[in-house]
Image (cartoon, rainbow, N blue to C red):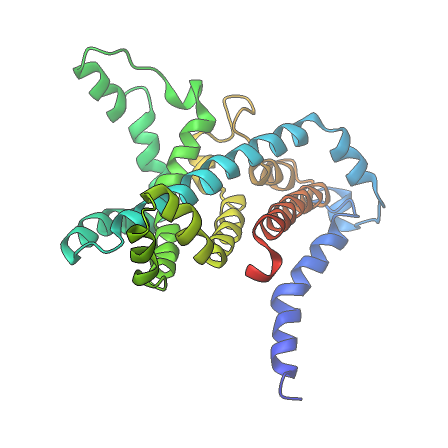
Length: 280
């Protein structure tokens, strides 16, 4: 049984926590009170509650907007654009672009959150710069909280996509692109009909990874806006934390976590369907 240790590890560290979370979502588990001393099975009560809870639907919409804006369009698109720009460039140019992008990636999430909070708060760098130009500033984290956290997440995570696409583009034979250029294909035509089809597997893999990473983002949003003002930037991880640890409703918080899992599955299946299952 040479695979037995690997199967045990998968069961303990991966399948086990998922199964436990599913079981917990069907209970009234709590951090305090009588439910903490004796947890009871409540069936689908948590599911019924979250379906009827407007805060859950608000968090679902904001989570999808956050993922599409910062991961699918932002990190994925900007990462591909940077990789295409660096393709065939010399070492000096690649270093000039790669170093600052990578620096943002290695910054701890909580540090990145404080950096963007300091940049966007009413007395921050952005308003100071706008004031120097004679332009009015505003409380960006209050007026456009979702846009603020989307930009922060793009800034911090684009390096991952860029590295994925740099590796993928290095595998595209240069003579194929050169032949298309000789045949009169424009840059956009070569990108659409030559380059993109040849890196479809990398695109699919990158989309799945950055989407799942972005669905987990908590500290960045919690530090910058704490989900506010009100609940205007409250994503599912923040709502889950609020229910499980601030209101001590561990079972209900776990049920919300399963909604997050379902959204990740929907995105992943969408990518597979769009790009082709055999290419993932």
